[in-house]
Image (cartoon, rainbow, N blue to C red):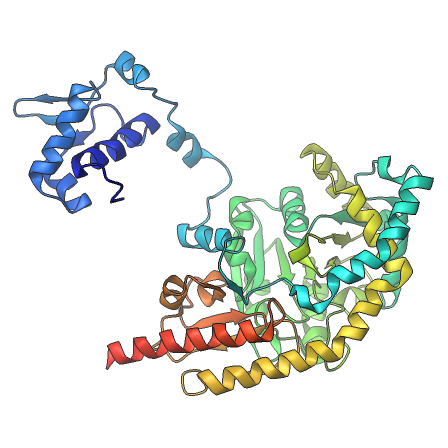
Length: 477
């Protein structure tokens, strides 16, 4: 209970009143003093006083041998400000609600937690905002001399799509502007694709752990979901082959480069085999290539889309820099697919911010975007190596050997005695994501982003996590 100065019985009455007004407690629902006392951890006398207060308001009524029930007198409920039965409406909505714990974690991403070691974000001390400021004079001149700001094209502004087609050639992807659509992020891209293609008769296959675990987008489509585990070389092919053999109408979602959150990249052998399997079985592929340009030790292998000769792969790319609001994504697919996606985007009245598109276009054309990545690469690599050293120093005796990958994220797996979700709940000052966020059967892993904050704050976060983990071990002993 919220000890706000009100008497306990008044606080309980307030809580029950809200449940009645919202429709959660329907007319004629029986209210037991014993159950209320147990629920709120108070005496039966306090529960009785709360019910008497509600009875005085006409919201509940008592009858001999029948106990206390919610009143079915409609005008009294309306007089109390009764709203529609929103709980019933909400439960019948098509979009499946997030699991309560996941919902709170998503809200925490924008909370006031002091230290953020979870991405996708780039710390303000790494110079991305300065890069944006360099291109702003070009953006302002363009706004003054053209009518681009008023261009309305559901696929995205034409000049940006032309620019992206030129950039994609570097990665072996040949596309025309009509085969590209701009969205505000990977999640929106997946939402539009889901609304366009997925239904209850389809099977959606994806790698796990995956951010899709925290999104009810695919489940809400009614599609059957099959999760394929990873090893150090990426998605396993044996379980994938079994699904292809036993299931019709599949679609495969895969994050082959710097997989989020594990950081694992598909080996070339594994990449070729999966594409060959999909080609043979005629299974469409959704390739999420969100960290294409963010490599540190060596360039990433070419995307699967580069080897797609039959329009099998729908490709999703995006910019980096989510934390400062610079987030754009693009879908590359055959023209008829883009037309369908554009139609759905129109129906949902989704418009991608034109000013953001113009800024991205100028960033790419000016070379400032590539300059930032190239010039920052040594610094990012140094930070990543420091982050691994910090993890080894504080957590080595608590975790399984690290699979060191040179990407944006670090995936840490604790011994089975450590409950990472409990650490998350107890550490209110730091923001990280436990493995549960990406796989609801995982309570021993955590995901860290060493570039999301200063390296000093990263060390402080790891130190706090280690402290809480050791507390758990002492409790077990």
